[in-house]
Length: 233
Image (cartoon, rainbow, N blue to C red):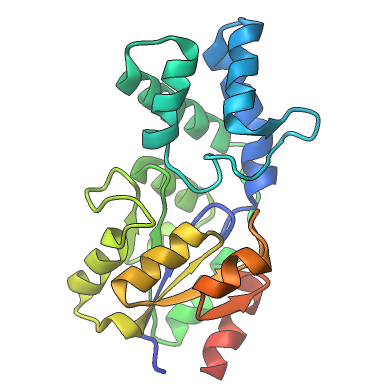
């Protein structure tokens, strides 16, 4: 197998999901509920959020879905008819929180620059918004090294649908099997498989080995082991 390009999911793959978004989610839900404790509790229940530990528990839609999906559910829970405005507000609040809460997994910049030095094209395909992905990639120092970065609102659909992956394949003229998608959820792996790409699961997110392995071509603990895996292929 010869790979020529690597797409990365973001949350749970490049960023520690709980450390980055656990505390941030608490702040955002408090803000969105505007001091209404009942409204806050509805968001907590809907989100499967563990308040005491400041983290999300499976099957929270926060783990793999986009704000374009869960934002509509939040709007309903808050009794707000301006559902699209709620989605925009959520995105804005999480972007503000991200400026001082990002916790990377290992050293994404070192992993990515190592792969680039070996000739791979690199991109990010996330179910977060494109603007948020750009902002966070900039904070991590990744933007100058990326050939491609898309989110749920970039016009290619959301994972588990393959649009983000197939758009990358088409843009750069690869064969599907020459591209790998690295991610921590079944959404990532289903998107890779549907596009004909290689699915590499990392166990650095909320999902465990037994959940991911049946859908993956390869399973590694985190991106820290990615270069060694690719060398072995």
